[in-house]
Length: 343
Image (cartoon, rainbow, N blue to C red; front, side):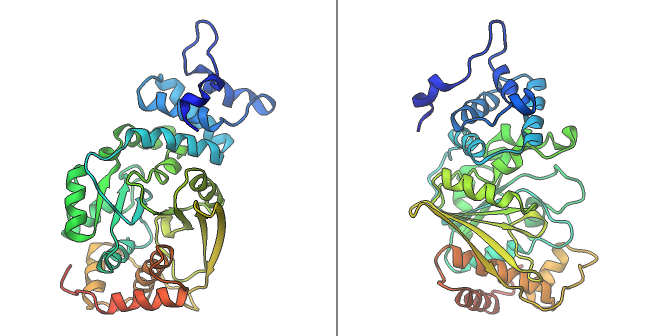
């Protein structure tokens, strides 16, 4: 349903009020008076925010009221509707997987980058988008890519070039949708994450047939699953990823929250742990450790499990493999035949 079709259901400001005031009021009228926004209301509210039609005090109140209330799927879908209107690419790009990267890593190196390289080696085209610097002490995707000698895309045309060249690219959110990047950067000012962190993971600006999403807090997984279903994404897979990124922790079991737009259904799939005992986290995760693992001078069971396990998950969800066993065997084969001189 388009916004025009639902415009008569949008709230009207009272005489003398700012046009955005009704949205703050809907969320802030207390336990009995407040309610969730409809999808149309959420779309309109986010459109106003992205167009700069909201005062800063209203923006802070709106985001934190949502944070306290906790967003619902219809709100996230409406926010994504608006955001997707403003982040259309300036170049034709076809990809197989949308891979949001917004958390940053702390305990372990970002092994998912090597998993993406294996997927590219298998012929899958992966678009990574993300934001960095909002939480101190984390390893962000753009930084580690540069340390590994890989380019970070500077605009949509550069993203198209890199995907054609290497099968994947990373384009910062400030290039995809600058206003949303500014909203995420409010975290150290507000002291809390806002629904924008969830929204960014739902953008899928290139309409990839598979949307992978990593979250940190397990209760958010069904929320992302339901919002992906509302947005009509062909297939989406949500996991509690290591550090909040799309990366499998091979030491633990994994639940994948799936949604399928064509079938109009949702499902869950469980993957067992890859190891019987947990591994000790490394002292200095980073590019040096990653290079050594890739070129084979460092044997790291956890790292290999994270790489192979993450690649297997994406191979299964993308339809390249039909079973978990087949996906793991395929990922292991890609790992064993990798170009060890690449990094």
